[in-house]
Image (cartoon, helix red, strand yellow):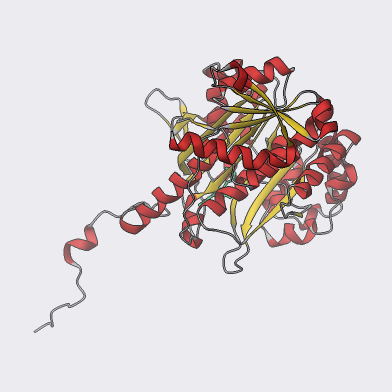
Length: 437
Ligand code: HAM
């Protein structure tokens, strides 16, 4: 008599399972997901970002043209298929390309700058491992139409604040610059010259990349390529004057805002659209070293989609990776109520430092510095700002600020001068009064 098979799973063996690298999300994990989304979305709202939802499926061209044919994402990881109309379609591997496609096709770039945030599923046919899935979720932010180091620092600060908002406090920010087009052309020449001496020893993939897009060899994960690249020239030595000044200003502002960062010359990111600032955030917890999030500036992305020649910057955080190391944390955010507005360009740096001080004191503030004063006031109006802090030459000299209560009908209330040292206390009091009302 044959013994019963105690390990026979019966019907379970035939049950459908999720596709490899894709997970069902339920119970405490679903709660965690919701917690992360709610908290980080609130950070986005406090910086004036609005939600955008774009389709999960785009014409393959959208990703090929923006992310670049020779990137791993496009050449190996995309879920691409022909639909019933014989058109090539791709499940989005990341959020930026679709958002920028939408900004252009929906004509959203008419009023710039524009700040958009998104959250949802992305798909990459990668080798599944801890924190790496074939379907994963990102929460991302794109700030389009304000090319200045201030915006770069703002987005880096926001990325850090997003992690803090969910209770992740130990992380490292790595930054690099990819310079402008001229810089990258010169750097590419240097890389080609260097790699041509090592071509034989490159991985098979990188031999192909060498012919088509040599800079991509720098983000190869193959050990042979990594060894060769560790001795390669670094972009810092090829930055033209403008790119160098831009990067130096970003670093200076980060220091002024007391944001800790590390420069990593080999941080090139895996997507072709970046120029100037690129950054990644890693947990300081050594048991998980993959990036929690990353981003950077893109100068040409809008024009690739036929939009205006304006720059943008953004970042995305990987929600599954945040879930891996999440500790609970509670932080309640207020909607934006204050804007710091320099009258003219010479007041920008001073105003930006005041703006950051307000933010570190927990005041939800915006920094509006593009255009003349009347345009800046209109932008403040459009963003729903309640209190404008106006800083001109006279205010800088006298250590004061002009306060404009945007929503007051009482004209004597409209403009007030205040000692700059009393600004934070006044704003906190005013915000509390409004909360009580
Ligand atoms: P990315 O670095 O490719 O950038 O992805 C951002 C984050 O998504 C990563 O740091 C990681 O946390 C998460 N992620 C990526 N791949 C996977 C995966 N297979 N499994 C789990 N999590 C993953 C971008 O996607 C850019 N669009 C970011 C950006 C926005 N740049 C400018 N704006």
